Length: 193
Image 1 (cartoon, rainbow, N blue to C red):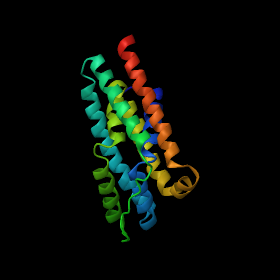
Image 2 (cartoon, rainbow, N blue to C red; image 1 turned 45 degrees about the horizontal axis):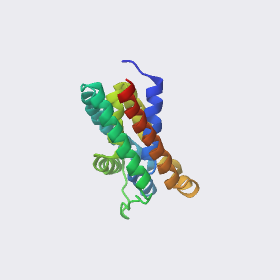
Image 3 (cartoon, one colour; image 1 turned 90 degrees about the vertical axis):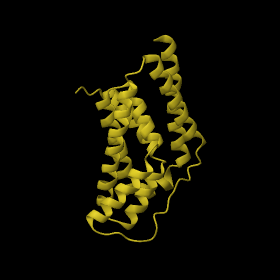
Image 4 (tube, helix red, strand yellow; image 1 turned 180 degrees about the vertical axis):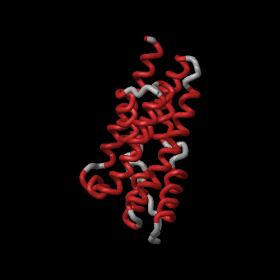
């Protein structure tokens, strides 16, 4: 297994920026205010690892297609991701209800299911599959999982600080512009490669 540091950093950066203003960050923050944060983090992290495994598996299958097809699909997916981030209003905050959940397994299960269900077809899952199709699967998996787990930890530890200091619209715009740049890069690679 070969790990490419640049692919890990690329995956980490893109996924981190895409997940930061996502509804699952707010779900983690909300659950962390009513449940034990470490238990929530274990639950969300496990769900993210499962989704990364699914996404890189799909991406490795995409990688079997002809190169120009993969780059065309990559460009389209990155353009879609850019569109979604740039048009988003930054108001994805979810209410998880007022009930307090205690104990490791109830908290873990609640956090796992909240993230596992909400991440299907999410921008970060699509981006991870897309990156896995064009980069090393192991590197993308490591970078993506680390980014998702970091965002969850960040939400649990410092979510209120971020919400007060960094406008989510700014984070979305930066992520959207990065994805737009990658879409353009993919199109250029089709014609120059």
